[in-house]
Structures are given as C-alpha cells and as structure tokens.
Image 1 (spheres, rainbow over the protein chains, first blue to last red):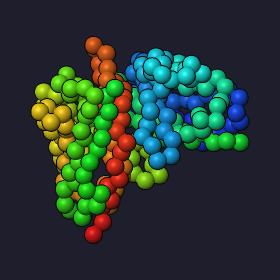
Image 2: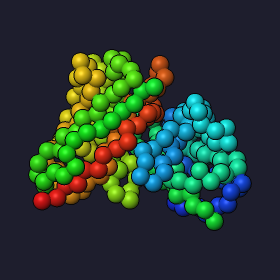
Image 3: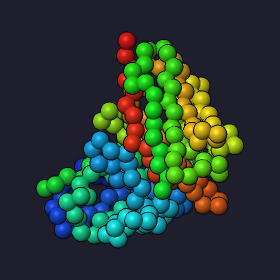
Image 4: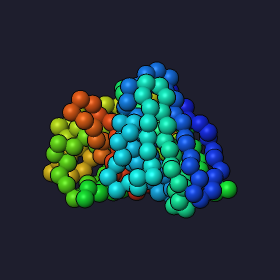
Length: 107
Length: 121
C-alpha cells in the first residue's frame, strides 16, 4: 500500500494568513493526488483533484501543487470558514489511501 | 445535482453482518463508479471499496475477506455488507461517487452525509 503522510498534524493560524499543508507519498504517485476539507460532523468535501485542479465551486484561495511524492495545499488568505480538517488521498493505485489529516485551528 | 444518502442500522452486534444502503438521487447510476469509505470516531479516512454500475468491484485487501458491495440499478442504489464485525468496525460510513479521467479513477465527489454504525452487544 502507498503510505500518505501529512504535515503538520495540526496548525494554528489567523484569519488572513497564508497556510500551506504538505502531503508526502511513500512512492511516486505522479499527479494522482486529491485534497478534501472536513468540518466537524460533516462529510469530506472535495477541494482539489489531480494535484492542482480546483473543484467547481471551491474558492480560488485554495490551490494545490506538486508531483511525484511531494504535494502541497495552499490557502492564500484564511477565512473563518476554512478552519477544518484537511486530508490528502492518493488515487495512483488501489487500495486508495488517505493521509492522517491536518487540523487547522484558529490562533 | 447528484446526492447520496446512506441508510441502515446504527447498532450491530459483534460477529454479525453490517448492512448499509446508499441511495443516489439527481442522476442515474448507470455509468457511475460508487464507493464506500469509513472513519472511526476521531480518526482518519479508510477506503473500503468501490463498484461499477455493471457490478465490477474492487475491495481494500485489508477488508476483502469480509466485504461485499453490490448494486441495484433499478433502484439507483448500492449496498455494503461487512461480515463478522468487531468493535474495530465502529465508524461513520460514507458512500460517495468515484470520479476520474479516461485513464484512471481518482477522487470522491460528492459524498453522502455519513451514518454512524456502532458495534456493541
């Protein structure tokens, strides 16, 4: 199985900050990397697919980059509604696997 | 737009079989890939498996011996059965549409709201 490791596991930031979350794969997954946002008690919501494609309806302050084994999710200017957990997921091969999550909290 | 909704018992006894159904609205599942993902309380996401509308399946090897996913296109539904459950199977279970490109499957969107299944006697 491909292991996905996110860093940091938790992060405190303020409204307006630029935030970057990193996801590393245990082997190359080319660009088969997706990002989700999950708010407490809610289902995950797709933000980014294939590393850098913004899902329809997702604000442009979210962006993704990377290829091979190293990927980043960037939020250019944090808004109050962005405080949530974020997960990466590889779709290079089955079993599909997720990172352990990054909890973004208000400073 | 396409919406998914999970249904089934919220409490299952140890050693019994967990059974959930996902009803899809807003679109026909004919031509869809559909998947199940679970999340133990306070933990991360685990992929269980997926099914194509034709009935082709792909399961996580960690659960393969206990999992069956089936589809009923006439009802626009697909189902999950997980046998011989233990407390470790307690989780929120999500169904989701699996999307992709012409060359590969990839991302889950949209998701159902999820349903908590507790394994306890």
